[in-house]
Length: 445
Image (cartoon, rainbow, N blue to C red):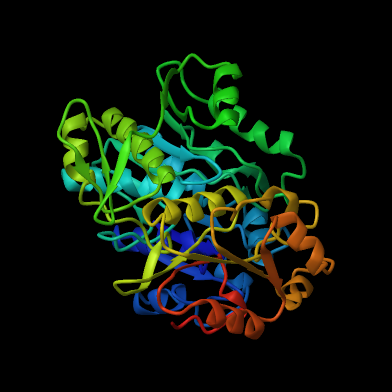
């Protein structure tokens, strides 16, 4: 097939383009901006657009399908021409469903833990050479792309993002995958720019559940009160499986879990939230045909995902972590995880307000006490970022009050850097949390 990508530079979009090229399809694409790592990866594959920008000449009768990225607007000239010509247009969720509609689709939804849970499932299935399709929100060890397409598989595993599908279809992505097995890891208000009320946000998970077939399965975290409420009250004929984190101990800097059926198991990852993710992954793998014994054998070798508690420096007395955490629930879970592993070591938690939701004054109260278990707590936001997003300025004292006692707030990356230097002697753990770059701050230690 000849497939053209409008907005090929997106994280998932360029991975899907690479995956389809590897399957023998002819791929073209366009975008008005392409950044790393997409730029280098597309260039290596010969898929980088020769000119940056939109060009209606890219759209012709020889194209079998258009795949439209979220970055493209409704008035995109290539999109308008494709619509005028009556070409088949997919968003990437629509394409992934079309390719897997005769397969068993496992979709991981939730406000946090989606990528880690999906990565665990993929790791275990690959460990046993199970053939599957997949889509995950980060490059993970052992996988060259974030998207995998198979002609022979009977299973597909998707990370189910609740953000919008495309400019011409404002439904959340995870609705379009039409899950056979649905996982909900947690519910905590996010994406305030598209879900202006908490009730509207929660409604998306109700729709997700209602879309399950009668022979489907709903796997949900029983330790999350909102998840339990939604899963118990929403009408579905699917089988419900509730999970909780297993009992654990910490020995020699590692989490060990107790299991009544097997010997104690040493894990290469840590944190109560990741133990919850592991149990969600276990039940999903059982649905895919893996036995419980096989699951625990494989999961011992899982080391985590990129940008999730990723170690950037380690000594005998200190570890510096980088984490993608940006929503309040993710922030709290990440800080608590490091505290659980090193209860006696001083912890510096540094966070950047970077997303639309996090920079929204009305959303800030959601962050209250999210870093409470850290010893030293600092938050950075950039006035330049607010200007670029066309958002009103924030008051430093108001941001500090919303985060809770002991949080120091900065608007200057250099002042934050000095603050970190004053509190880091080489005997502390440091946790750097952001979906951005800390406004370009030098984070070498």
